[in-house]
Image 1 (tube, rainbow, N blue to C red):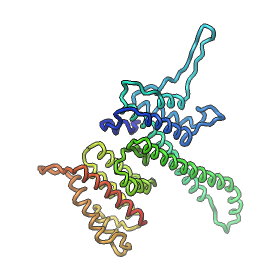
Image 2: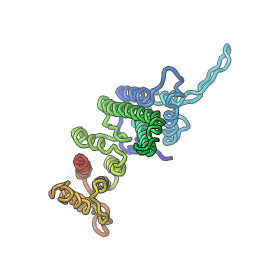
Image 3: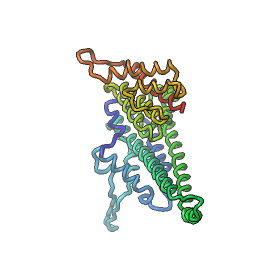
Image 4: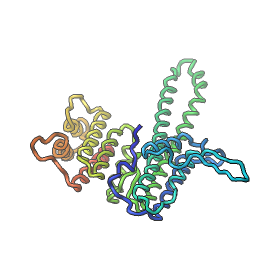
Amino acid sequence: MLTDIFAYRYADRPIWTEFRETDRVLLVQGFQLVSEQLFPLSKDIPPDLTNKDSWFRLHSGLCRELGLESLSPVRWGFEDSKHPAEWGLRSSTQVCKTWLLEEFKPGQNADMFMKERISFLELAFRDCKQLILAAEISHKSRLESFNKKTVDPKNNLFLLMEALNAPISVELDLLKIEIGIKNTAFIAACDELNVRFQRAKVPLNYRNGFIQIETDSLVQDQITAPFWKLIGDPKWKNVEIDMLEAVDRSENSKRDPAFYAAKALESAIKIISDEQGWTIGKESGAGHYIDNFRKRANGSFVAEWEAAALRHIFSSLRNPLGHGPGGEPMPVLTQQQTDWTIEAAMSWIKSLIGRL
């Protein structure tokens, strides 16, 4: 299975020109975050019995993308004339740690050295978040199944069923608390990682499964960070996918990042219209969904001037970029125009979700 990693996304975008002491410290701190807060290692049992599957996935997934059989030697052994030969196998955790924290040697490419190791941190945080989401989905499914078993309270069997289901109910409550604790710890780890990036003076930021290049700190604080936080719910998945694509294309000078930002905005508009019960099924484009927003019958979700501004993004940006120009010149935006479009789309999505 192909895995999107930091080192590939920014292969053509130089970030490190040298390996600094602050970079070494960042890698140590990053490993500690993974091994102590995401997939902690127990002091009472062997490392391979604690979060074994997660460490194995991290190791094998990164090896496949980097074209390696192992990040560092798995087998250890020694022998001498006075003692019999001894050998053994290192755990996935030990193999990852040895590779991640290995000494940077003169002549190595600092940019690739760091990008590969940042990819490890990215995969670890992404895997942890996916495990939490899977647990939340499982809990929701089990809770729905449990609730369906409930019978009419007027029936004499209700008390018996309630008594039989009590242990399941307690288990589900405890599971919900456990998921909440893990999610809180994960959010704290994400915040700490971003602070570590800032202190190491590395222009990176982790959000929603990806480590990306950060630019304007004011935009990050007021627009970008709140936006990614708001779309964390799985129902905004398509919004997330297209906005991540927009940011990736912008940072790597690829074609039409603004088109994907507009797609993300359109998805958000459609989701909101559907959830509010305003969609009538005859809509043929973003403009019709925006009409749903401005109708008085729907509470004038947006004002007339806001509806006009939203339509302008699609008519003047998305449509020209989304259709072949024929014999006309290919539409091209400057980097400043692209940045504005992405930031504007994020701001609109943030504003619309905030009104719900």
